[in-house]
Amino acid sequence: MKFQNIGFIGLGLIGGSVAKAIRRVYSDVIITGYNRNRDVLKEAVHDGTVTVAADESLAAFASCDIIFLCVPVVTALRFMDRLAAIRKPGSILSDVGSVKGDIHRYAEEHGMGSFFIGGHPMAGSEKTGYANASDRLVENAWYILTPANGVPQEKVDDLKEMLDGIGALPLVMDYREHDMVTAAISHLPHVISASLVNLVHDEDGPEEHMKMIAAGGFRDITRISSSSPQMWQEICLSNPDNICSMLDRYIAKLLDYRQAIGARDADELLKIFTECKDYRDSFGTRAGSVAREYRIYLDLIDEAGSIATVATILAVNSISIKNIGIVHNREFEQGVLRILFYNEDSMDRAIDLLAGRGYIIYHD
Ligand code: NAD
Image 1: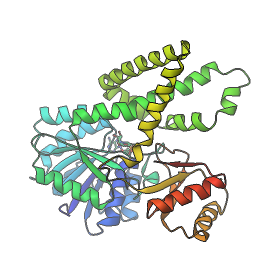
Image 2 (image 1 turned 60 degrees about the vertical axis):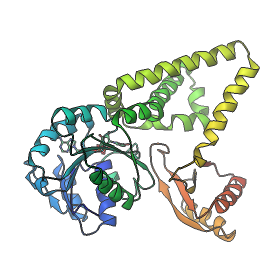
Image 3 (image 1 turned 180 degrees about the vertical axis):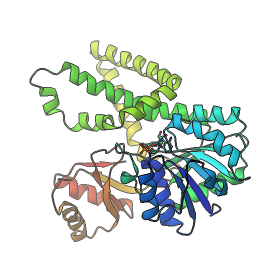
Image 4 (image 1 turned 30 degrees about the horizontal axis):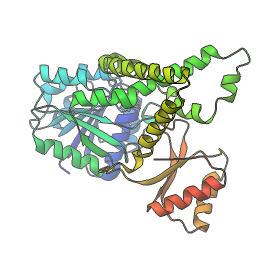
């Protein structure tokens, strides 16, 4: 691993999680940290994650081989010039922001095109702050890298190697493509989820029957609406063109569907639902996916011993578990049990067994 001194500005959910993961895997590296809230910094030193607590001068970051900006997107821009001025020659500046356009344009306009590598770990939670950071948050999560044009390939490879080491799945992309892709698969779904939840809120009667019986599908498709309102406000303000463009296409699609439903067009309706099922079912077995894992998620009854019960059901049926634990992320914000298996056969047998016992199971 090429980076011996790794800097973090912002030790919240994402910065804290990446720093903790690095500390778990690369125990000897120096981690230099700075956070506006000094108590967080003290805690990170105390738990062994941060080696050097930097002060507001940021002078300590002059020794870093790579610096991660892990503060809100707008705040990150305010650190760029100061870090560029003190950085060690050959070092890398990176970030973790959910939108990449503004920070890339800033980096290129301010002469940072040879050392800025944008980053976006596709992992998160509705919770924020260091207290909720986990050294496993980015494990098995896509970690998109958007190197500026002048960054030497070996530097990109060094960063990929480090991210591989902490179990993330690095994926290099142009920053413009990143903002278009995430508008479609992340930002638009949040807008749609918000509109669905607010629609039900507006249309529900005084007895709130819609809210009361909202179950299964509605809860799944709107789970992400519990995320931080400020973060999603910031994302919409940072990526408006891509989101509006996807929204326009989505509205056109909705009008097509409305037409098919209004016209009672049975063939068209079957075509719509068949096409979406086929495409959705293909997600888990995408050719070339390095993320092929045999994993399932299940809703747990919140009571003592419920994890042990599941583990026992699998054990008595001779199904080996590779890993088991509760996860909180954007998709499962209330927390679900994730179980990893060694092979597809074990996973399929576990699904049959657990579904047969009434567990609600999600899998890719
Ligand atoms: P967070 O609120 O948990 O952490 C932000 C941290 O930055 C806090 O520790 C805060 O004290 C610190 N901070 C804020 N302003 C500062 C300043 N001026 N100086 C020093 N420290 C400052 O937020 P987060 O979820 O970790 O988000 C950070 C970045 O990660 C954002 O850019 C966000 O777009 C991106 N991101 C978030 C998620 C997610 O789901 N939360 C996922 C991927 C990327």
